[in-house]
View 1 (tube, rainbow, N blue to C red):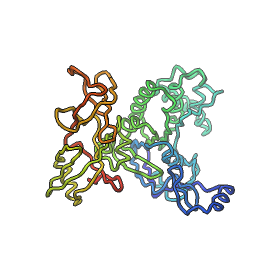
View 2 (cartoon, rainbow, N blue to C red):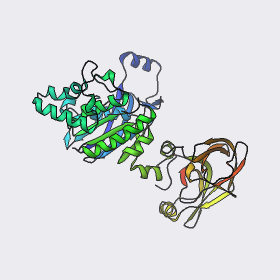
View 3 (cartoon, one colour):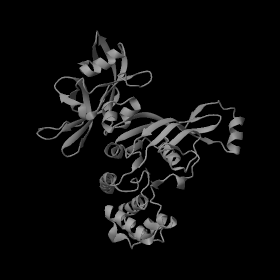
View 4 (cartoon, rainbow, N blue to C red):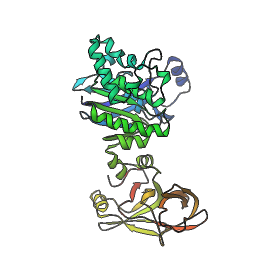
Length: 392
């Protein structure tokens, strides 16, 4: 059990001697973009300006595309990566120079990292034996963890005799027997198939209710982020894009990146115009005009947002088929059982409309013309200049 605080955390990977020579030879500018990460005189900046307060027993999920810095951040908390700048506190104690084994944390890796020559029991007991705990206490802790994870029947087996999901349970069990203050999990479900991932997500939710530990979980899978986290931290190119509860991030994305990354299928985007008339706001797109909700109008008026060209965002499940509205032609129809995903194009942009198949006599097919619309409370308005949500 612990509070974790990251203050202006930064991670820079210095250039090697040979790379530094080549860099100087080419007379590179002091800063440039390469592989979406910032390159400076110091080296490649993987994480910067990372600030986060994690409450005791909170489940925090770091989510973002590959290379955004989320695993690097987790490894800095674990002590497996040095911190280039900033401060890390666990339970109020500065941890920058503290060895990993002294931080009272446990980590579950993507590849299980089990000892192949040891039984499940010995894998789970290994760290406790290193602490020279009494045999009876070790046995009690191992069997208690095995019962929680429903792997008691596998205690005498070797890892090679287990399925992927069972191995991951063993890896989690090896971590929780230590009763760590902080549990770190680095994409633990990415090697599992879809069915097992769903099962293990449910197991992790049950697990966090049974053990008193702070969780920091890394994933690129937004479904895991939305279902597991008390709060999620959306990252891109080493920077935090938004922090909030899953519902806050889904309902009020801070910018175009968050809007496009969170939600499946991805949010539809349109070239549109935001029109202000007094304290009332309208969006106009392809001849369709709708007034925004009173809540959105209040926020925009408070920021004195004026009439301007915008990028309009509307989620596919908030888009309706109507008799009047934005005209478009269906390119692809995906039948999903209870619903159909209609892919169409509007003014050169691809959009998706999710419609219920229940009671619908004819599902629109390729080449059919349809009209789509949306309500003012589900429209998100983003700046054309910097992509930020104009409401916040």
